Length: 148
Image 1 (cartoon, rainbow, N blue to C red):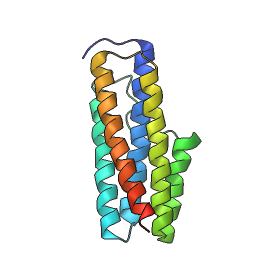
Image 2: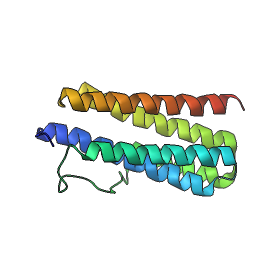
Image 3: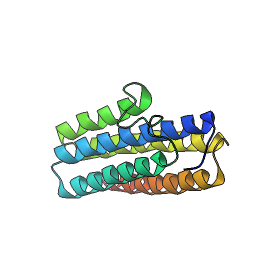
Image 4: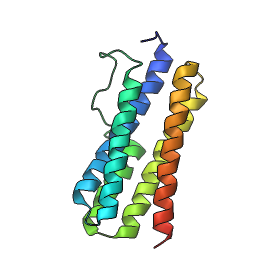
């Protein structure tokens, strides 16, 4: 593990929490979804966030890691709670709209992290890679929503 600044640690912790929220949101949605294609996609995105969090945790010490912490307040939490509510109504368009909003929030967190300029080139590359994959997820969700 490389030594990083307190600001860089804070940036990484924020992204871990964002991924924990995304993981929980999609995990819950996968459990509740009735449509097999949505269930499969939600499971894939949940696993993706779990992997992203693990990749980020490599750069901070165990005592600095937020572990399974989620935001419990604010925009990110609301986005995934809206998803949970939409899934329970089985309204496919509402579910996908909620997913897109959640992905917008995650992308915003990644954009902010990259603007901080507090992380090493190695960590910045990882953040950019993860952001690109979340953008792909966003575009997939948006295309499915727009097709309805």
